[in-house]
Image (cartoon, rainbow, N blue to C red; front, side, top):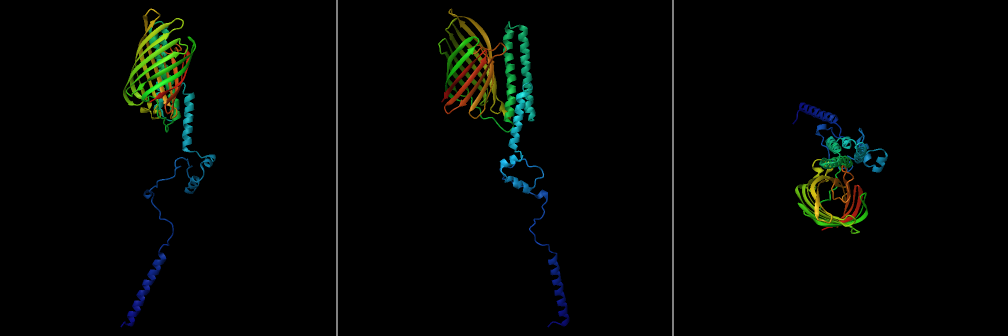
Length: 400
């Protein structure tokens, strides 16, 4: 049994509790769809799956809604509105640098690479140009002082030609490197393939020392990586002259397909049966090498440069036996690369007394340019030799 005073106190306590619950309910914040603020250091970036991310240069201050709208806009429309894509920007930069290398790069090698902020390559090309000009200047002065009358000119001439080759090479590398840019790499070089080969080519030769003539050249041999063997014959279609040549060579320290040292032994026999008939026998030893520039400069990967030097002797017979002889020095500097996956270009300059086209002069030798197109069975080739006259060759080979 509850007394009247106790009933009053109980009712008072219940009233206080109900008032407290009502106040708490009024002070509780309403539930909304807004997410609580997150500290910047707690945010975790999400990996983007947009395939065009990084291609479009979006102006600063663009909102999320505007970027979303841009991502849904067709690319041609964006280009018309003036948006610049990074691939286009890189291509424009490379094209401008290549144009500078083609023009201003003639006197200043490496300026194209300097334009694209590749000071390392630019310095190397400029140094190569300086060395080449030094060789050309020193050898030209020596030949001029000698008057071309002694063995000094015989040594100075190859040195001048080597300097000239280096000058042309450093210029071309500046152009090639800027065309490639920092993001692109040339296709794999397809020269120096292994296995057996047989080649036939038709040639048209004309020079100031001989009338126009038509010749056929046939070659065959085998390349087995560490060495190579080749035999060759060049026949005048009118049977007025014939040449036979053999080569035995070794490749040493081959760390890359286009990086190695070479040692070659060459022998040849030439027979001329027209007016002033004579026979000639020659023997020669060569030492040289090739370098894949990609080992030093990444943009020149698969671009091969190299040279070889030779020393030999030629014996002559004018019907009374081989009773006279001459000693000679020979050399060639070259570079080659693939313009496409199947098309290779090789450019070389040098001199050799047995060349089918004579040297332009004692200081300027013979320039060779060859294009080789790879097929399923071998190569199709076009080659030209320019000196004191010209020779043009068209043919191909089979490899197996």
